[in-house]
Image 1 (cartoon, rainbow, N blue to C red):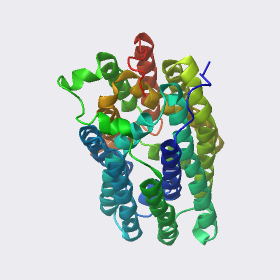
Image 2: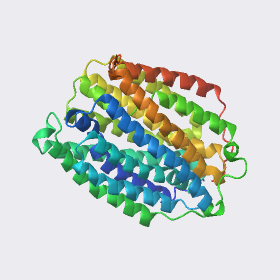
Image 3: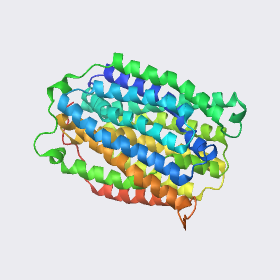
Image 4: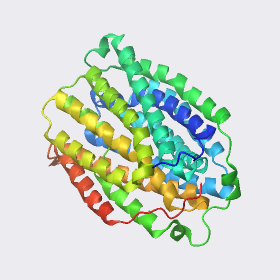
Length: 409
């Protein structure tokens, strides 16, 4: 059972959770409509959308590795995290004037630079601030806050779009621009909460200097094998933009797509905290295996879907997958590496996954629509591929022993 004598979650965990909540209110007001805006208003192809998402995530991933290592070297997490959130907030207004998919790519690039700067230091800050007996709970709560913000952001997007004519069945430029304007308020509030609500941890300062001699070897073989399996899984985990396009493909309009994403995030938020706490009791690997099994079923379902209600139902399963795995995976990273390498480890972990997003998203777009003179196999293909990769990764994870090496907070 979870040790009830373990310290309560710290102020840093709650402040980081509130920051992620507000950031996702802002992001989800726009991000779920962005693929439809690109496809239906700017005329971008699925390959172009895959390129945008892949380049954006690759940019973030490269910087996650650098920022995580730098936070270890400096013994400072907070400043890098605040800078990253501020940069993303400042990039967002430029979506208002974006008139080509290339311009959207530029904005997404700047936004992901901010994400790359903040993610690894923020995750390390949460881990540094949490007793090891509460790591699953802390990261589960953080993911629940993040996803709760998504719920509110999508609900606000639905209300805003329904207040104008475009909200009933489609998306147009004025509707998208209105969403962008409203999204700026929580984006800048999030920066303020992190700047004034979080304090630097003594542990980060004590372990300044980062990964000692031995480089990546100091992170440990099991950690590196775990990252390799995550990369394999991610090769089949293309951008969620393709799930949104698939939902539209089988009959959902813009309002229905937003409703679908709202219920997805409600499930995610409801599952994340108890699943994180359960991983403290039952183990991280079991939660990951269960989540990946659900993911494989979900993507297989999307490959076969023929009606909008089916896509909606499948997104509920997708929310359960996220809730079961996100907090457990982040907690497992802290379990497997020493405290002085924690920022670096989160940088490597997030970078490896994010770098894989480019080939994953490009492959999904090509499998769906093709490229050049080659015609793709159709909408079912990227989802069948994703289901297969998830099954293969789950088999390998099941064979890998992943008991914790380090338990100091």
